[in-house]
Length: 439
Image (cartoon, rainbow, N blue to C red; front, side, top):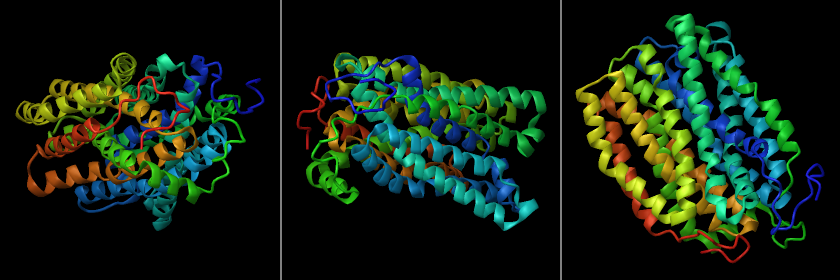
Protein backbone atom coordinates (compact mmCIF):
# COMPACT_ATOMS: atom_id res chain seq x y z
CA UNK A 1 0.00 0.00 0.00
CA UNK A 2 1.22 3.50 -0.85
CA UNK A 3 2.50 5.18 2.32
CA UNK A 4 0.83 8.44 1.28
CA UNK A 5 -2.65 6.94 1.40
CA UNK A 6 -2.56 6.18 5.10
CA UNK A 7 -4.45 2.92 4.46
CA UNK A 8 -4.03 0.14 6.97
CA UNK A 9 -1.55 -2.59 6.19
CA UNK A 10 -2.11 -6.27 6.88
CA UNK A 11 -0.58 -7.33 10.18
CA UNK A 12 2.15 -9.30 8.40
CA UNK A 13 3.34 -6.34 6.29
CA UNK A 14 5.99 -3.94 7.44
CA UNK A 15 6.01 -0.35 6.16
CA UNK A 16 9.33 1.15 5.18
CA UNK A 17 10.93 2.14 8.47
CA UNK A 18 13.58 4.74 7.74
CA UNK A 19 15.24 7.12 10.17
CA UNK A 20 12.86 9.94 9.35
CA UNK A 21 9.83 7.75 10.10
CA UNK A 22 11.29 6.54 13.40
CA UNK A 23 12.10 10.13 14.32
CA UNK A 24 8.56 11.28 13.59
CA UNK A 25 7.07 8.45 15.66
CA UNK A 26 9.23 9.03 18.73
CA UNK A 27 9.02 12.83 18.52
CA UNK A 28 6.06 12.95 20.90
CA UNK A 29 7.93 11.02 23.56
CA UNK A 30 10.96 13.24 22.97
CA UNK A 31 8.84 16.36 23.51
CA UNK A 32 7.45 14.83 26.69
CA UNK A 33 10.89 14.31 28.17
CA UNK A 34 12.16 17.66 26.91
CA UNK A 35 9.27 19.35 28.71
CA UNK A 36 9.84 17.12 31.73
CA UNK A 37 13.54 18.00 31.91
CA UNK A 38 13.11 21.73 31.28
CA UNK A 39 10.29 22.03 33.81
CA UNK A 40 12.15 20.04 36.45
CA UNK A 41 15.21 22.22 36.13
CA UNK A 42 13.36 25.55 35.97
CA UNK A 43 10.79 24.64 38.63
CA UNK A 44 12.07 27.44 40.88
CA UNK A 45 11.68 30.39 38.42
CA UNK A 46 8.39 28.95 37.11
CA UNK A 47 7.09 28.91 40.68
CA UNK A 48 8.23 32.49 41.21
CA UNK A 49 6.50 33.59 37.98
CA UNK A 50 3.10 32.02 38.65
CA UNK A 51 3.03 31.24 42.39
CA UNK A 52 5.00 33.99 44.15
CA UNK A 53 5.45 33.51 47.89
CA UNK A 54 7.47 35.03 50.70
CA UNK A 55 9.14 31.69 51.36
CA UNK A 56 11.06 30.40 48.28
CA UNK A 57 10.45 26.81 49.40
CA UNK A 58 6.67 27.32 49.22
CA UNK A 59 6.99 28.77 45.73
CA UNK A 60 9.09 25.78 44.62
CA UNK A 61 6.64 23.27 46.06
CA UNK A 62 3.73 25.11 44.35
CA UNK A 63 5.58 24.86 41.05
CA UNK A 64 6.18 21.13 41.55
CA UNK A 65 2.50 20.71 42.38
CA UNK A 66 1.63 22.44 39.08
CA UNK A 67 3.99 20.00 37.37
CA UNK A 68 2.01 17.16 38.93
CA UNK A 69 -1.37 18.57 37.89
CA UNK A 70 -0.76 17.58 34.28
CA UNK A 71 -0.53 13.96 35.37
CA UNK A 72 -4.16 14.02 36.51
CA UNK A 73 -5.27 13.91 32.87
CA UNK A 74 -2.87 11.21 31.76
CA UNK A 75 -5.07 8.22 32.63
CA UNK A 76 -7.97 9.85 30.79
CA UNK A 77 -5.76 10.42 27.76
CA UNK A 78 -4.52 6.85 28.00
CA UNK A 79 -8.05 5.46 27.98
CA UNK A 80 -9.52 7.74 25.30
CA UNK A 81 -6.62 8.10 22.88
CA UNK A 82 -5.18 4.62 23.47
CA UNK A 83 -8.52 2.96 22.72
CA UNK A 84 -9.04 5.33 19.76
CA UNK A 85 -5.70 4.14 18.31
CA UNK A 86 -6.85 0.52 18.51
CA UNK A 87 -10.11 1.39 16.73
CA UNK A 88 -9.13 4.08 14.20
CA UNK A 89 -5.42 3.42 13.80
CA UNK A 90 -2.09 4.48 15.23
CA UNK A 91 -1.49 7.39 12.84
CA UNK A 92 -4.57 9.53 13.59
CA UNK A 93 -3.98 9.06 17.31
CA UNK A 94 -0.36 10.20 16.96
CA UNK A 95 -1.45 13.31 15.03
CA UNK A 96 -3.93 14.25 17.77
CA UNK A 97 -1.45 13.79 20.60
CA UNK A 98 1.36 15.89 19.12
CA UNK A 99 -1.04 18.74 18.29
CA UNK A 100 -2.45 18.79 21.83
CA UNK A 101 1.03 18.53 23.27
CA UNK A 102 2.12 21.62 21.36
CA UNK A 103 -0.90 23.56 22.57
CA UNK A 104 -0.15 22.75 26.21
CA UNK A 105 3.51 23.79 25.91
CA UNK A 106 2.53 27.05 24.18
CA UNK A 107 0.10 27.97 26.96
CA UNK A 108 2.88 27.65 29.54
CA UNK A 109 5.59 29.39 27.50
CA UNK A 110 3.46 32.37 26.44
CA UNK A 111 1.38 32.93 29.58
CA UNK A 112 2.01 36.28 31.30
CA UNK A 113 3.21 36.07 34.88
CA UNK A 114 1.13 36.44 38.03
CA UNK A 115 2.49 39.97 38.45
CA UNK A 116 0.93 40.94 35.09
CA UNK A 117 -2.51 39.29 35.06
CA UNK A 118 -2.90 37.95 38.59
CA UNK A 119 -4.79 34.72 39.20
CA UNK A 120 -5.62 34.30 35.51
CA UNK A 121 -2.00 33.30 34.99
CA UNK A 122 -2.51 30.34 37.29
CA UNK A 123 -5.73 29.38 35.49
CA UNK A 124 -4.00 29.45 32.10
CA UNK A 125 -0.95 27.44 33.11
CA UNK A 126 -3.08 24.86 34.94
CA UNK A 127 -5.28 24.49 31.83
CA UNK A 128 -2.16 24.13 29.69
CA UNK A 129 -0.79 21.38 31.91
CA UNK A 130 -4.13 19.55 31.79
CA UNK A 131 -4.22 19.69 27.97
CA UNK A 132 -0.67 18.46 27.78
CA UNK A 133 -1.38 15.70 30.27
CA UNK A 134 -4.27 14.48 28.13
CA UNK A 135 -2.00 14.33 25.08
CA UNK A 136 0.92 12.67 26.81
CA UNK A 137 -1.32 10.05 28.39
CA UNK A 138 -2.34 8.90 24.94
CA UNK A 139 1.00 9.29 23.18
CA UNK A 140 3.11 6.39 24.35
CA UNK A 141 0.67 3.58 23.44
CA UNK A 142 0.07 4.39 19.75
CA UNK A 143 3.66 5.41 19.03
CA UNK A 144 5.18 2.38 20.75
CA UNK A 145 2.70 0.02 19.11
CA UNK A 146 3.59 1.55 15.76
CA UNK A 147 7.33 0.99 16.20
CA UNK A 148 6.77 -2.55 17.44
CA UNK A 149 4.45 -3.50 14.58
CA UNK A 150 6.56 -1.85 11.89
CA UNK A 151 9.89 -3.31 12.98
CA UNK A 152 11.36 -6.58 11.65
CA UNK A 153 10.68 -9.31 14.25
CA UNK A 154 14.35 -9.88 15.00
CA UNK A 155 14.95 -6.15 15.64
CA UNK A 156 11.84 -5.18 17.60
CA UNK A 157 13.79 -4.54 20.77
CA UNK A 158 16.32 -2.23 19.13
CA UNK A 159 13.79 -0.31 17.01
CA UNK A 160 11.33 0.14 19.87
CA UNK A 161 14.15 1.20 22.21
CA UNK A 162 14.37 4.43 20.20
CA UNK A 163 11.21 5.40 22.08
CA UNK A 164 13.35 5.54 25.23
CA UNK A 165 16.48 6.85 23.50
CA UNK A 166 14.47 9.78 22.17
CA UNK A 167 13.90 10.84 25.76
CA UNK A 168 17.65 10.91 26.28
CA UNK A 169 18.15 12.92 23.11
CA UNK A 170 15.61 15.45 24.38
CA UNK A 171 17.19 15.63 27.84
CA UNK A 172 20.65 16.03 26.31
CA UNK A 173 19.42 18.77 24.00
CA UNK A 174 17.70 20.51 26.91
CA UNK A 175 20.83 20.33 29.04
CA UNK A 176 23.13 21.67 26.33
CA UNK A 177 20.82 24.54 25.37
CA UNK A 178 20.17 25.48 29.00
CA UNK A 179 23.89 25.48 29.77
CA UNK A 180 24.75 27.61 26.73
CA UNK A 181 21.96 30.07 27.53
CA UNK A 182 22.94 30.28 31.21
CA UNK A 183 26.54 31.04 30.29
CA UNK A 184 25.46 33.57 27.66
CA UNK A 185 22.79 35.56 29.54
CA UNK A 186 23.43 34.72 33.20
CA UNK A 187 21.33 33.19 35.96
CA UNK A 188 19.11 36.24 36.42
CA UNK A 189 18.00 36.35 32.78
CA UNK A 190 17.40 32.60 32.77
CA UNK A 191 15.09 33.00 35.78
CA UNK A 192 13.24 35.91 34.20
CA UNK A 193 12.72 34.81 30.58
CA UNK A 194 15.23 32.11 29.61
CA UNK A 195 12.98 29.28 30.73
CA UNK A 196 10.24 30.52 28.37
CA UNK A 197 12.68 30.40 25.46
CA UNK A 198 13.51 26.79 26.36
CA UNK A 199 9.85 25.77 25.93
CA UNK A 200 9.54 27.83 22.72
CA UNK A 201 12.50 25.99 21.17
CA UNK A 202 10.79 22.68 21.83
CA UNK A 203 7.72 23.88 19.96
CA UNK A 204 9.76 24.55 16.83
CA UNK A 205 9.95 20.85 15.93
CA UNK A 206 6.19 20.23 16.17
CA UNK A 207 5.32 21.25 12.57
CA UNK A 208 7.95 18.86 11.21
CA UNK A 209 6.58 16.04 13.33
CA UNK A 210 3.01 16.70 12.18
CA UNK A 211 3.98 16.67 8.50
CA UNK A 212 6.01 13.47 8.67
CA UNK A 213 3.52 11.65 10.88
CA UNK A 214 0.71 12.48 8.44
CA UNK A 215 2.56 10.52 5.72
CA UNK A 216 3.22 7.37 7.73
CA UNK A 217 1.48 4.12 6.71
CA UNK A 218 -0.86 2.46 9.19
CA UNK A 219 0.08 -0.67 11.18
CA UNK A 220 -3.02 -1.28 13.30
CA UNK A 221 -4.23 -4.16 11.14
CA UNK A 222 -7.22 -4.70 8.83
CA UNK A 223 -10.27 -2.53 9.42
CA UNK A 224 -12.46 -5.63 9.54
CA UNK A 225 -10.82 -6.63 12.82
CA UNK A 226 -13.80 -7.73 14.95
CA UNK A 227 -12.41 -5.82 17.93
CA UNK A 228 -11.84 -2.57 16.03
CA UNK A 229 -15.39 -1.33 16.56
CA UNK A 230 -15.43 -1.99 20.28
CA UNK A 231 -16.28 0.98 22.45
CA UNK A 232 -13.71 2.54 24.72
CA UNK A 233 -15.47 0.97 27.69
CA UNK A 234 -15.43 -2.39 25.92
CA UNK A 235 -11.69 -2.18 25.28
CA UNK A 236 -10.98 -1.37 28.93
CA UNK A 237 -13.30 -4.12 30.14
CA UNK A 238 -11.59 -6.65 27.87
CA UNK A 239 -8.18 -5.58 29.09
CA UNK A 240 -9.11 -5.96 32.76
CA UNK A 241 -10.89 -9.26 32.17
CA UNK A 242 -8.28 -10.98 30.00
CA UNK A 243 -5.03 -9.31 31.00
CA UNK A 244 -5.51 -8.03 34.54
CA UNK A 245 -2.50 -9.81 36.04
CA UNK A 246 -0.21 -8.66 33.24
CA UNK A 247 -1.41 -5.07 33.61
CA UNK A 248 -0.89 -5.15 37.38
CA UNK A 249 2.71 -6.35 37.05
CA UNK A 250 3.31 -3.86 34.25
CA UNK A 251 2.07 -1.06 36.49
CA UNK A 252 4.69 -1.92 39.09
CA UNK A 253 7.52 -2.28 36.57
CA UNK A 254 6.71 1.07 34.95
CA UNK A 255 6.32 2.69 38.38
CA UNK A 256 9.92 1.75 39.23
CA UNK A 257 11.13 3.11 35.90
CA UNK A 258 9.12 6.30 36.38
CA UNK A 259 10.56 6.95 39.83
CA UNK A 260 14.07 6.44 38.41
CA UNK A 261 13.42 8.99 35.68
CA UNK A 262 11.93 11.48 38.12
CA UNK A 263 14.82 11.17 40.58
CA UNK A 264 17.22 11.71 37.66
CA UNK A 265 15.47 14.81 36.38
CA UNK A 266 15.27 16.13 39.94
CA UNK A 267 19.07 16.02 40.26
CA UNK A 268 19.52 19.66 39.12
CA UNK A 269 17.19 20.79 41.94
CA UNK A 270 18.92 18.38 44.35
CA UNK A 271 22.35 19.69 43.31
CA UNK A 272 21.36 23.33 43.71
CA UNK A 273 18.81 23.44 46.54
CA UNK A 274 20.10 20.54 48.66
CA UNK A 275 23.83 20.33 47.96
CA UNK A 276 24.36 24.04 47.38
CA UNK A 277 26.12 23.77 44.01
CA UNK A 278 26.13 26.77 41.68
CA UNK A 279 23.34 27.35 39.15
CA UNK A 280 25.77 26.77 36.28
CA UNK A 281 26.91 23.43 37.70
CA UNK A 282 23.34 22.33 38.34
CA UNK A 283 22.25 23.38 34.86
CA UNK A 284 24.68 20.92 33.28
CA UNK A 285 23.27 17.89 35.14
CA UNK A 286 20.77 17.05 32.33
CA UNK A 287 23.75 16.57 30.01
CA UNK A 288 24.89 13.58 32.08
CA UNK A 289 21.29 12.37 32.22
CA UNK A 290 20.90 12.80 28.46
CA UNK A 291 24.17 11.09 27.49
CA UNK A 292 23.26 7.98 29.46
CA UNK A 293 19.68 8.04 28.18
CA UNK A 294 20.75 8.19 24.53
CA UNK A 295 23.31 5.40 24.51
CA UNK A 296 22.07 2.83 26.98
CA UNK A 297 18.44 2.37 25.83
CA UNK A 298 19.81 1.23 22.47
CA UNK A 299 22.14 -1.16 24.28
CA UNK A 300 19.14 -2.42 26.24
CA UNK A 301 17.06 -2.91 23.09
CA UNK A 302 19.93 -4.67 21.32
CA UNK A 303 20.44 -6.93 24.34
CA UNK A 304 16.72 -7.70 24.60
CA UNK A 305 16.78 -8.95 21.01
CA UNK A 306 19.58 -11.35 21.90
CA UNK A 307 19.05 -12.59 25.46
CA UNK A 308 15.35 -11.89 25.95
CA UNK A 309 13.19 -9.19 27.54
CA UNK A 310 13.00 -10.46 31.14
CA UNK A 311 16.76 -10.58 31.93
CA UNK A 312 17.18 -7.02 30.66
CA UNK A 313 14.23 -5.91 32.78
CA UNK A 314 15.50 -7.62 35.93
CA UNK A 315 19.26 -7.16 36.30
CA UNK A 316 19.65 -3.41 35.73
CA UNK A 317 16.78 -2.73 38.13
CA UNK A 318 18.36 -5.03 40.73
CA UNK A 319 21.64 -3.13 40.40
CA UNK A 320 19.86 0.17 41.04
CA UNK A 321 18.36 -1.38 44.18
CA UNK A 322 21.88 -2.25 45.37
CA UNK A 323 23.65 0.97 44.34
CA UNK A 324 21.14 3.77 44.98
CA UNK A 325 21.88 4.41 48.67
CA UNK A 326 25.71 4.09 48.46
CA UNK A 327 25.79 6.35 45.38
CA UNK A 328 23.73 9.11 47.00
CA UNK A 329 25.75 8.76 50.23
CA UNK A 330 28.91 9.48 48.26
CA UNK A 331 27.36 12.57 46.67
CA UNK A 332 26.17 13.89 50.04
CA UNK A 333 29.55 13.29 51.69
CA UNK A 334 31.57 14.73 48.78
CA UNK A 335 29.26 17.18 47.02
CA UNK A 336 30.71 18.37 43.74
CA UNK A 337 29.68 18.74 40.12
CA UNK A 338 31.73 15.64 39.23
CA UNK A 339 30.09 13.39 41.84
CA UNK A 340 26.58 14.54 40.90
CA UNK A 341 27.26 13.98 37.20
CA UNK A 342 28.73 10.53 37.84
CA UNK A 343 25.83 9.30 39.97
CA UNK A 344 23.28 10.76 37.57
CA UNK A 345 24.98 9.02 34.65
CA UNK A 346 25.26 5.65 36.42
CA UNK A 347 21.67 5.45 37.64
CA UNK A 348 20.31 6.78 34.35
CA UNK A 349 22.32 4.24 32.35
CA UNK A 350 20.97 1.30 34.34
CA UNK A 351 17.42 2.63 34.26
CA UNK A 352 17.63 3.19 30.50
CA UNK A 353 18.73 -0.38 29.80
CA UNK A 354 15.83 -1.63 31.92
CA UNK A 355 13.30 0.71 30.28
CA UNK A 356 14.20 -0.45 26.77
CA UNK A 357 13.21 -4.00 27.62
CA UNK A 358 10.05 -2.83 29.36
CA UNK A 359 8.84 -0.72 26.43
CA UNK A 360 9.08 -3.65 24.00
CA UNK A 361 8.16 -6.54 26.28
CA UNK A 362 4.88 -5.11 27.57
CA UNK A 363 3.15 -4.40 24.22
CA UNK A 364 4.47 -7.69 22.82
CA UNK A 365 2.55 -9.46 25.57
CA UNK A 366 -0.75 -7.85 24.49
CA UNK A 367 -2.84 -8.70 21.40
CA UNK A 368 -2.94 -6.18 18.57
CA UNK A 369 -6.59 -5.19 19.13
CA UNK A 370 -5.88 -3.84 22.63
CA UNK A 371 -2.11 -3.24 22.43
CA UNK A 372 -2.21 0.54 22.22
CA UNK A 373 -4.90 0.93 24.87
CA UNK A 374 -3.25 -1.52 27.25
CA UNK A 375 0.14 0.16 27.17
CA UNK A 376 -1.36 3.67 27.15
CA UNK A 377 -3.56 3.07 30.17
CA UNK A 378 -1.10 1.28 32.42
CA UNK A 379 1.72 3.65 31.45
CA UNK A 380 -0.45 6.72 31.97
CA UNK A 381 -1.78 5.59 35.35
CA UNK A 382 1.66 4.60 36.63
CA UNK A 383 3.34 7.77 35.37
CA UNK A 384 0.42 9.85 36.64
CA UNK A 385 0.73 8.49 40.14
CA UNK A 386 4.51 8.43 40.46
CA UNK A 387 5.87 10.74 37.76
CA UNK A 388 3.80 13.64 38.96
CA UNK A 389 4.50 13.07 42.64
CA UNK A 390 8.10 11.89 42.94
CA UNK A 391 9.81 15.26 42.58
CA UNK A 392 7.42 16.78 45.10
CA UNK A 393 7.71 13.85 47.52
CA UNK A 394 11.51 13.63 47.58
CA UNK A 395 11.91 17.39 48.05
CA UNK A 396 9.23 17.36 50.75
CA UNK A 397 10.96 14.45 52.50
CA UNK A 398 14.28 16.27 52.44
CA UNK A 399 12.67 19.46 53.79
CA UNK A 400 10.70 17.60 56.47
CA UNK A 401 13.24 15.07 57.72
CA UNK A 402 16.45 16.88 56.90
CA UNK A 403 17.79 13.58 55.47
CA UNK A 404 19.49 14.27 52.16
CA UNK A 405 19.44 10.54 51.32
CA UNK A 406 15.64 10.54 51.04
CA UNK A 407 15.70 10.28 47.19
CA UNK A 408 17.93 7.19 47.44
CA UNK A 409 15.63 5.42 49.89
CA UNK A 410 12.63 6.19 47.72
CA UNK A 411 14.39 4.94 44.58
CA UNK A 412 15.62 1.75 46.26
CA UNK A 413 12.15 0.88 47.55
CA UNK A 414 10.58 1.15 44.13
CA UNK A 415 13.47 -0.73 42.51
CA UNK A 416 12.79 -3.65 44.84
CA UNK A 417 9.15 -3.70 43.78
CA UNK A 418 10.09 -3.36 40.09
CA UNK A 419 12.60 -6.20 40.27
CA UNK A 420 10.12 -8.63 41.79
CA UNK A 421 7.38 -7.66 39.33
CA UNK A 422 9.73 -8.13 36.34
CA UNK A 423 10.55 -11.65 37.55
CA UNK A 424 6.85 -12.52 37.27
CA UNK A 425 6.37 -11.22 33.72
CA UNK A 426 6.39 -13.57 30.70
CA UNK A 427 9.23 -13.71 28.20
CA UNK A 428 8.05 -12.35 24.82
CA UNK A 429 11.11 -12.44 22.56
CA UNK A 430 10.12 -14.09 19.28
CA UNK A 431 6.38 -13.93 20.04
CA UNK A 432 4.01 -13.72 17.08
CA UNK A 433 2.36 -10.31 17.45
CA UNK A 434 -0.95 -11.76 16.22
CA UNK A 435 -0.92 -14.85 18.41
CA UNK A 436 -2.88 -15.05 21.65
CA UNK A 437 -1.00 -13.01 24.23
CA UNK A 438 -0.22 -13.94 27.78
CA UNK A 439 -3.03 -13.20 30.24
